[in-house]
Length: 251
Image (cartoon, rainbow, N blue to C red; front, top):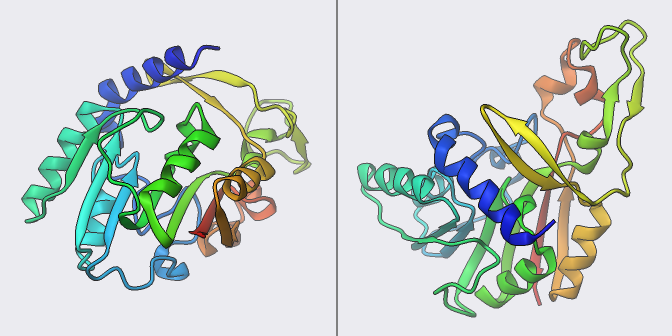
């Protein structure tokens, strides 16, 4: 599938449906049924730091860091509607940010060797060029700068509940693989009255791409939140990670 078609399809979806996702999956949250920044403290002290968010969406994660005295806010998103929402939110709260409308894969007016933190909350998985975007992010960061990103855990797309009546929870409680873990081909997924195009990358694909881009991985977190782990009804979350988060440092 051509990268331009994938980007165009996903851009159209986000421009048309940005308001439906306003404020969702943003710091302190890292993902679905996942432990939060309040638990992990991956950012440490951001006071005075220069931060760039890839796929900044509605701006809520930028606001979260601004509330903690981040020194300079930058955000990139392929959706103009998302950036309009982000700009409005930040200005309403007394903050300003440099917001760039562009696919993350494209060359953009972003300074090199400049940022203390680059991060992406459930955004990196949309890329059509994982190695290319990791290389770009490494170039944006200062030496020893930190890259943090989260996404759907690969197993979450591979595993489903076995069931006769197609309900999520079944009497025998058995999990089945309905998709190969090794299949990294793109697939189309219907969402709302539209569609998106994604691929499901192996964990090793992320780790190896980070290493090739010049990062050393400091943490990888696969921990679901306490509520999901203790819920009797949420058996899938009790048996496998739903989201994953990486923290890496530029060498």
